[in-house]
Amino acid sequence: MNLHEYQAREILARHGIPLPGGAVATTPEEARAIAARLGGPVVVKAQVHAGGRGKAGGVKLARDASEAAEHAARILGMTIKGLTVRQVLVAPAADIASESYVGIIVDRASQRPVLMVSGAGGIDIEEVAARTPDRIHRLAVDPRYGLLPHQALGLALHLYRDVGQARAAADIMRKLYAAVYAVGASLAEINPLATTPDGQVVALDAKVVIDDNELERHPEIAALRDATAEAPSEVAAREAGLTFIKLEGSVGCCVNGAGLAMATMDLVKYYGGEPANFLDIGGSSNPRKVVDALRIITADPTVRAILFNIFGGITRCDDVANGIVEATRQLRLTVPLVIRLTGTNEELAVRILTEAGFSALTDMDEAVKQAVAQAGA
Ligand code: GDP
Ligand code: MN
Image (cartoon, rainbow, N blue to C red; front, side, top):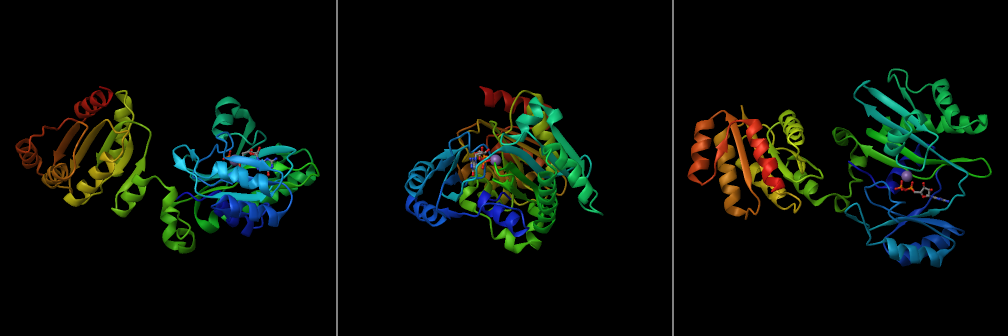
């Protein structure tokens, strides 16, 4: 689950990380009032679940309250990476002398939380990783001991020559590590971690992603969900009990089982296509889920072809077939549908689909090739 920057800031501030305080506005007038209360220059920042807001024009410095209101008027309603801005954060602006990057991710390869730091802050870390990978320093943390003071200081000395600043940054890293564990985050980033001309080290941006599996034991964090800021298809899927992730491609995928869904996406890419989504309808045989899944996929205008890939085990192919027939009765399909089913009750499923005017394949490669071709046509 993604949080907004202002929510991430609250979490980090609660853990003692120095961050200029601020407040959220939904109208230019509110932004003006917050800026007036803060006094002095402020920064007005779009609150959307996307990075690169600065580049997109969603982060603006204002000298005073009326300039803050003007920026808010321009930023509110703007779309950044397809997301509409409904809130802006108004915070005291800092003078920046330098910008670094500090982040923690849960790393599958080392099976540990990994702390990453870079002196090349302010820009996307993916860009730094691609262009100047030697400017990123990493440390896999042993969760039995946590991030030890000398380890944090060792990393911080890659960022700052000044020992006082390095100590301050090391302290921030340890607090960030504590925050990650406290809220069940899979990622936490401060970019930029800035120095001011008078030598302070402050966090000027915060990003926190919560591991969905942690939400049950952190109801106070789960309550931070802003469904209005999420992709509508993801909200609909969550409500329908489907595991769904929206992607950028044009082949809509409807698959049972997360492993098969991953394999299907791999094969779509292998044959030159791009998946429009990850969707796992789960192991049950509920035709209702098939209807929900198709409704979500067909509502996405970027989908050019739909691929069903079902491996029947506990999932019965005839149930899925009935779901497809039912769904296509309810929904108007405007894109081609390629169906591959194999396993439990496969013959029955093929009969149901054939009678309803569909054809069904049993070979996965063949089905994926067809779906990619249709999406490209
Ligand atoms: P992002 O582009 O979505 O990561 O948004 P950021 O919050 O990181 O802001 C982008 C850039 O705006 C930062 O890298 C800074 O250069 C600049 N910026 C953000 N806050 C301040 C501030 O308080 N003062 C100054 N001078 N620049 C800021
Ligand atoms: Mn940033």
